[in-house]
Length: 126
Image (cartoon, rainbow, N blue to C red; front, side, top):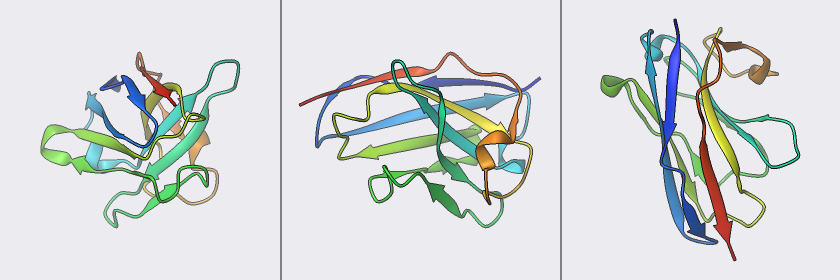
């Protein structure tokens, strides 16, 4: 059974940086594409960024392109979301997931494997 635990959420000032962590269990996460999602208050959960297997190619939602990256540590079965220059529109609960595919083409966010982890809350102050 795939499980994931997100951590690292905090109150951060706009323009600073924050790193979220996502540790998988039950699978060798490096064998799957992996993604980060977020859900802002009153909004639906949305796909934010995706990390492909093997190639390491990444895809980002336009709103975070150039600010967020997805470092990984396969030895720890962990991916990260490096949030640089967070903006006041970024606050949300952040979640991670493994995908039932190897790449991040098209609507990658619908190919999620397993359930959701507890998420981690990010708040951004101006």
